[in-house]
Every structure is written in structure tokens, then in C-alpha cells.
Length: 117
Length: 114
Image (cartoon, rainbow over all chains, first blue to last red; front, side, top):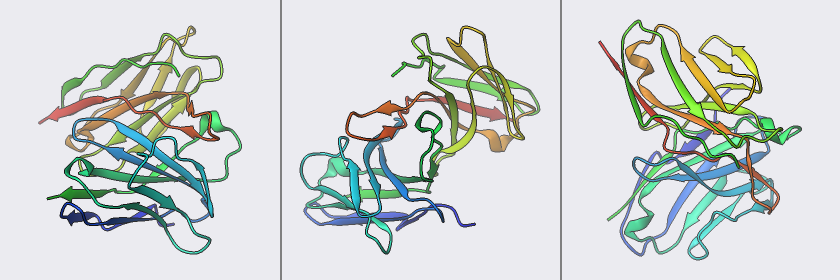
């Protein structure tokens, strides 16, 4: 049973370019979360999606960032017109349909390390 | 959401038992305590979760006293490969926008020395 897959693992972009990060959840998981981690910091929640729906994007910056989880294919986190401050590790996590939210266990992918030159 | 406090770093020799304590004085009645492990350049990995008393799995044990204001992650006989950051999480943050999120602090950086 494959775990959460993310690609690319490393992404280098110049300021002003677009970055597109992909996440394939574990089989049977319909919930996807995106987190961002700066060096020496813990992970910070960005957005929570279910198939074809954005449930909570309260952690997303108001501009340039968007996310989707289409009916078919991986979840995509898109960053337009990247700036140096966007350099970070971006992690995707997935979980099965939730029955007890207070015990939610999320399974994380290996992350995409974005470097903006 | 209950705030957690854990040591920034710890050192241990190989083969020793390591105990990492997390304080969470404001834990709510429904909150569970969850520990994640993160190796460099990898995503966090679930280790163990508990509500009260003691929980043990193949990787670690979790001790939770009756008042639940703290918890201790115990790693038996650590090896070099246990060098990682360990995060203590209490409850899930409800955003008010329909989701529950994990909230990570800075964790405890465990260094295992040969």
C-alpha cells in the first residue's frame, strides 16, 4: 500500500514564476491537507480539501496561492509569481473519511522543497 | 487549543531509554495526545496516540498521568536512527471553517550519540 506521494521532491523557481506542487493521497483517503514548514519551525496548516471541494483555506495566504483536489488525479498546490519568502518545505497529508475528528491521524508525504532564486 | 511545552533538544547515547516530557496544562476533556516523529528532509510520521494512563506499541510508550496535564514519550533503547525531531500535539485545532488541523510546535530535537 503506497504512502502519500508528492512530486517533485525539489523545485527551483525564479522570482515571478509559478510553482505547482502535486500530492497523491494514500489509497482510500479522501481528505488532503497542505502544510508549510520553514527551517527550524513546525509545520503550519494551509488548506484542507476533499474531492472537488475546498473545505478550509483559512491558512492560505490571501494572494497568489491556490489549491485543488479534482475528481481524478492528484491534489495541486499552486503558487503564482513566487517570491523568495515562499521558499520552504511543503507537505501534504491525507486521512481517511473521518469518524472521530479528535483522534484524526494524518499520514504525511515526503514533502516538496521549494527554492526561489 | 491546548498549548504544549517540550524541551527544545535532548542528547542521548545509543542503547539508552529516552523520555521526552510534554506539558499541556490547558488540555480539554476531549483532547487526545499525539506524538509525531520527523526525520530531516522527510514528512512527520505518526508514532503514538493516547488519552489517559499508558499506551504502548512496537515503537514507543506513552505515559499520561491522571490529571493529563503532561505526557511522556518513552523510546526504549534508542539507536542512531532515532535521531529526529519529536512533536507533541494535543487535540486538533478547529478552524471554524469546517476542518480540524494538526498544530505543530517546534518539537524536541533528539540527538543520539554513538
